[in-house]
Each structure stands twice: as C-alpha cells, then as structure tokens.
Amino acid sequence: QGWLAALALLAVLGQCRGLRRSGGGSPHTAVRCYSGAELGDEGPAQFVARSLRWDRHVPVQLVPQLERLEARRLRRHRPHACPALSLRAGLRSEAHERSISPWRYRIDEDENRYPRKLAFAECLCSGCVDVKTGRETTSLNSVTIHQTMLVLRRKPCPRPAGTGLVTLEVDYIRVPVGCTCVLPRTAR
Image 1 (cartoon, rainbow, N blue to C red):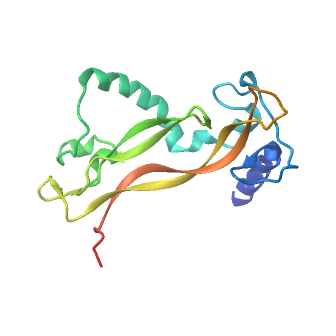
Image 2: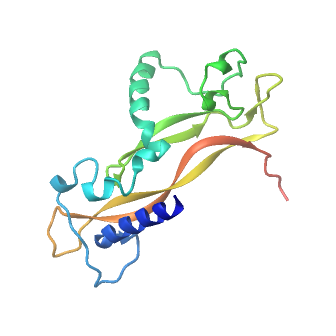
Image 3: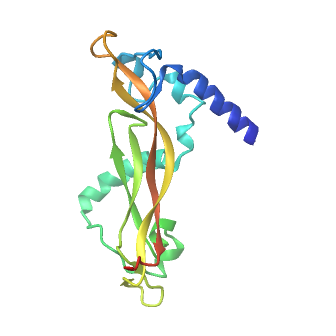
C-alpha cells in the first residue's frame, strides 16, 4: 500500500504543474490560471478527485456534522467551558468529551483555501480534568495536537493573464485535531 500511496502522490504532483509553492518558483514557471466558474466551491475536479482524497481527513469529514450541530447549539446557547468529568456519561460520549483534556470542534472557513471549511479542535480547559475529583486541575496543561495537511490556496494570477483569474498554490497547514495533557513548562 505504501507504493500505491507514493504513486498517487506522484500523480498529484504531476497534475500540479500549474501550481506554485508559496513564496517559491522562478519567474519563468508556467502558471495555470482559472476563472471562478472553473473552480467552483470545491476546487478544480482534477485536483479534488481521487488524487488528494481530502475526504479521508477527519477535519473535512466532521464539517457536515458540525454544521448540523451548530444550528442546534445556537438555540441552546451553552458556553464552552471546562466540563466536570462524569463517569456515567462516559460510556455514551465521544472521545473528545471523555478526555481528561476535553476539546470541541469549530469550523474554520477560508474562502481562498481548498478545502474551504475544516474542523479545528479547541481545548476546553487550560488545565486537565483530575480523574479522582472530576474537576479541572492546573498541575497539568491542555495543549492542542496538530496534523499537517496539504491544501490549495487561491492567489491572483500574475499579469498579464487577466483580472479576475486565479492560480492555485500548494500549501501545508497545521490543523488542530485534538487536545492532550502535558506537564507544565517550568521557568529555568
């Protein structure tokens, strides 16, 4: 399977001839320009089809579910605070709710990025939940865990290609996907 993944990556890179890496590239590099109609909301089909497989990334998979939950949450309007640990609720809860470093997801939207919407994790506690008391303790710290993800960025096409046209650049971003407990940093 490793070889298949490598071949798929090479296929994507072969299709990315029109893409530039942020801040790089020579002035003679061919740049493919797109109109808004060609790109649509999801990006050009040749990139988002089987090659990039954004649908395999949890930050992409969670977006539709979060959009449905957000509508319900707005009606209830509960604050996002560090919760007390409830052992009874733990059996039916998701991992991010049972964690001693609980987190929630929010939708990060960037109209110049493909995929445009990603689920970002946010820690609910600055400390961690003590398993004995069920309350937050500051003897440990909650920190986010990040995953590096390839995205495409919309950039204006260089002149004289035309106004209103855009090019796509490959970019790698750090997406917060969860939280964990760590020992606090100590002053030296």
